[in-house]
Length: 420
Image (tube, rainbow, N blue to C red; front, side):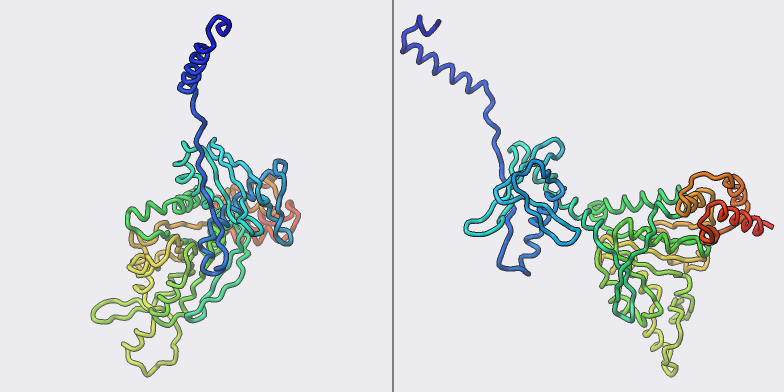
């Protein structure tokens, strides 16, 4: 109606003014940002680290791809391990904390295969993309790789280390130990893994020490294996009788990589020989003579390792030679340990592995027979409260028969005999 009443020139002016008003009232289209993750070629060895984030993104996107939404998919890998990835020119959307991030596979000119991966997002989310989303990709990939990697256990032969596959099946779920102690240990391990910046801020080495003590057969070695499986850390089982002097010990300990567990079992048996030098007590390793019977006392002390040499690695100047390390000592007799090992702050957590209690037995019964209840359970519970028996002894009785009724009856007879 207005166009019919107004002259054409005036209609044009009104239309132009209306477009200006709409331009100010309507929000502008969102600006987009693009981050390019390039793959470098031509320097396979020197560029391996530079390509690590490109590989991380590829591994991450393989877990986020929806095959139903992709036009083309690339399938690679061998055997049972197949990996999906985007074909050149394809895109996919990843949602992180409610924000949509788009990944596109881009090929370089004149080359085959993707040359880069482009991350696109709204400009307002730049801080989240670079500060939170990108680091979360690396963290997720590292966690997945740790979960999938095959663990090893290393043993020392002199100053060298030899590793074999570590296939111990122990986990915290199958471990027969006091539940509150187990939960406290798990919580401490979780807290340790998350505190990289905290340790840096307070100026301490990123490591954690545990002393496992208790009677023989209470599961200390199984707990070590469970910790390794939980953290996905390799084990370094150090035999101090194979080490001749402190420099050799230092070489071994420095050679341990990050994310590893140092284990010294029966630490009370290692430093039992005491000699005095210059009025000071000197703890040396209890060992057989190496054939240097004609050496004087000074030479002999130079050819032995000392407790102070080990403690320097635990919390001395050499303690910062690695990161994210766990140190575990085990002993059957805590009261025999040198006071220096028990000093506050030296071993962060003392874990008592005691005799088999009711909850520990229930874990064993569930492991062996997949049962949570049985008519003999009340009698077994009463006997366990009166008899000191180790989880190893209970396990031995349960292993004698695959029939739960027969095995549990045998356990009742065994506990009754011990009580009498």
